[in-house]
Length: 549
Image 1 (tube, one colour):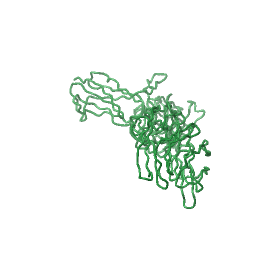
Image 2 (cartoon, rainbow, N blue to C red):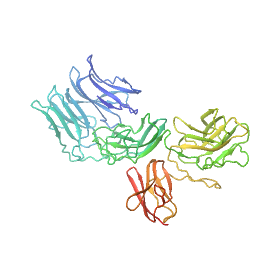
Image 3 (cartoon, rainbow, N blue to C red):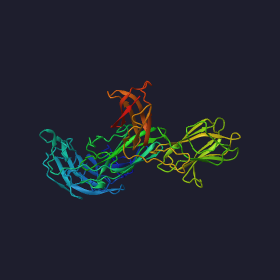
Image 4 (spheres, one colour):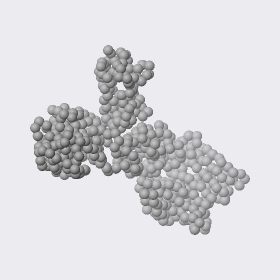
């Protein structure tokens, strides 16, 4: 039996053969999701003493079948071609028909086509894929006796760029377990890494996609892919690729864990938090590319950025001098005070840029909350068309936090729309919008006509502190191209930790931290040279600064 996504729908199906006790079977069982599988009646002959293996023999991007065994009317070794996930038809019949058998796909001669090794019934043969037909290459392997278990697998044991053979069984004279070295003079090269990695979040699920890679030997549609997913930078805690994350070296000679699928591979039921991921390509010799540049995403109520900070706010009306011009300004003394009675609204312009948000926090002025309200989002400031994402009846005042389910919103304008007032007027201190994307907001000048949104950095960078030398405080700025777990630590010249300024998950953008020249105990440091180190995953950057009394 073997796992494989035969219909490229993003979940693993089952290829199964053998003797049920009531008859012989060989069929594909479709994964319906939810833990159920249905036989598709693939048209394969039932076999016993059999073997099955998935492999893309014709490089068309879907998995074909190698089937061997005893049909009761004779032994077979056949390749069944996948017709775009709808049916299977015989693509090739190999001259060596076997039972008590083993079969495996691998590109032994690095010509970009999957070849076959098959054992059983006094045979052990390698068949070259000619692009529609298969030829016995007379590899010189010993025949393995019938009625005994045999096994053969591909693997590059000496890392010289071609696939060798591990063969076990009984020759009739003695049992063997031998490695046969491939003497091919043409070495395989690893594929390029996939590009344009994207992750689309829907509730607790995320769907991964990327642009297909290329390879000098294996055609593009023949490549398979390996996904890794972790809870820390460089991590594999959720999905292991069984490969070296740093080098891409594949630790097992198998298809990638997403098979040929380069888009629409979904992982479900992820807990809230920030995740780190990447993908690599694998060729027909099971060589892995380097992993693509790591990406990250956040599910649910994990760390987030208030993307309404210092954003422009407008209102249906206002009373007195409490006219809103910021959704959040960090002050509890300023608030929006409505006129009394009727339907009222307060609106935030999140500005342009890459937006993604799913949480709101309303901080009502004491005893001045609206009982009934909605949160609406729109791509137009006039709200001629809009989507209501939340409705509240009987608001309780104080601070209310609302977390949306499903796909995060991306609309530029957010409106707090109130239909009744609980008193002669109501007031809102702040209206926060919590974002889970690579969004960095630059502070707006109150008199500016437009605000500037800082561009997302393309590379990790640590800036020189300013001022330098300094007293009593200095600002340290750094760039994050992606969300990551960040540590920013101050050391003296002896390498001793003076102060840990940052140790948390942060979103992509231009970050700034102020150091007040004090150690962990709150004591002012001595005059001298200090190091500040930025660490993101395995990457570290260090600069010097001078404190002067």
